[in-house]
Image (tube, rainbow, N blue to C red; front, side, top):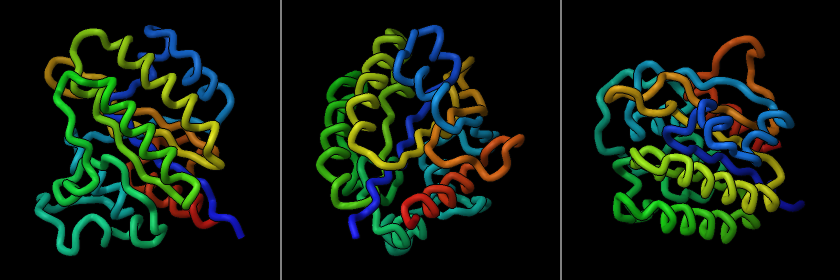
Length: 207
């Protein structure tokens, strides 16, 4: 039986506020044609903590330290046998793409290339930090991400696009992020917690 082409893609600082402001055509299309929701994250304004909650599939309460066994021992990675691409965890230096702070096009291009190179083999878990790093030309970066998603999702059976928090405001990130998926969230009228995203992807990848 063919492996499910399932993608979990976390894009830090992506916000619904960008959709109309930056006229993001493909993301606006997804907003109207997929299951959608709002990620609520008031605790972890840090990509490493946020991703740890997703990959552990449980709420994180302790301080973040180097992972025993590494990122590949985390429950979601271990249970789905997913390929990791640019996931921003301390223990995932072997899967991080090392890009200079302002070279967003290179990061987007390399993440796209890695996803497309791995998706035929099975589930992929990927991260993108480009939008979090910029303070100017935000719509240019958002537009490049929008185009990359169009190119990538054509090759995917199932997906979750999420952001662990929204756009930056006054030194902090908005506590609400994006959730767009081919699978509905567990509670239709409630916000989605980070650890719930991992559980949804586990079901998706093993469907």
